[in-house]
Image (cartoon, rainbow, N blue to C red; front, top):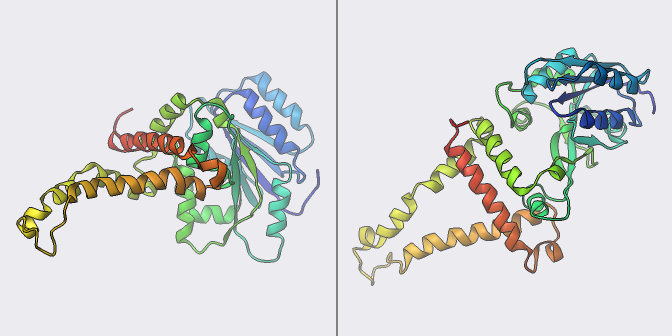
Amino acid sequence: MTKNKYTVSVIMPSANNFIDLKKCTNALLSQIYTPFEIIIIDSFGLGGYDKKQLQAICQSTCPFHIISHNERLNPGAARNIGVEKASGDFIAFIDIMTIPRINWLSDYLKLINTGEMVDIIWGSTVYDVNNSGLMPYVRDSIYGVDPIRTLPGSVIRKNVFLRVGLFLENVRTGEDSEWMNRTRYLNIVSIDSGLVAADYYGLLRLNFKNLLKKWLVSYRASGRLEYYKWQRQLAIFIALPYFIFLAYNWNWLVTEWQISSLFYIPHITKIVIIIPLLIYFFYRGIFLPRNNGVKLFPGILPIRFLMLFFVGAVLDIVKFYAFMTLNKK
């Protein structure tokens, strides 16, 4: 571990079990760069013995704060409490099932020390799955094998965070994406490091059935966010049969069934139905996985794209249903 002129407060919400929290804490204490302080916002209900264990792990490495709440906090609310407590020049966010790599903070701070003004270095996370069942298809279809930009792993100047504003506190999920999207509309210098910050192992604990339940709950909770507005509008448009009605009546309304007319389109109803389905099939089964870093051979082709399409389509249907039933619990 090394000292550094920068002071970085690591903020970690905790609503899971003690084993996960201990694992992530050990990873933070093993960093090449020693965090200035670690702040845990506990809404899980850590017992006194658990807290003493965590304090013993830290010992004299760095200040260690546990802020406990009797009620379950949404992640945004927990992070906001951590930011208020933080005294470092920089804030670094991490989640307890997102394990930082040993060189995370040291590499990110080197980028800040280049002399150029950098306000935010976005986190970069790899999603781990077991190579069995449907979960590898989930990873490849939704997240991909390449690192993706995430709030966990991000390092942010505290004054810049306050300028962007606090996280939304009344939503269960999606508050991180909403906050990240908010930074686009301000004059903030943010970069991607090109380095992997952390590994997420939460998918290792899920099967496909449990993932669908989590997917439904998450999008019902976050579906009203402005961040998802265009997806809601697209879902509503697809749900309404306007384009099918127009296609069904096109030849009657426009050409009065005159086959010789320039605007007469044979089999227009079938065309309007089949072409979007084909586009969606190739987009979901081939383009998106390839764009997410999955190799074309043998990762997608010759036949794996069929399962990638199936899994992605099922998840899209669940998301669509969540958007249509936002008021339900």
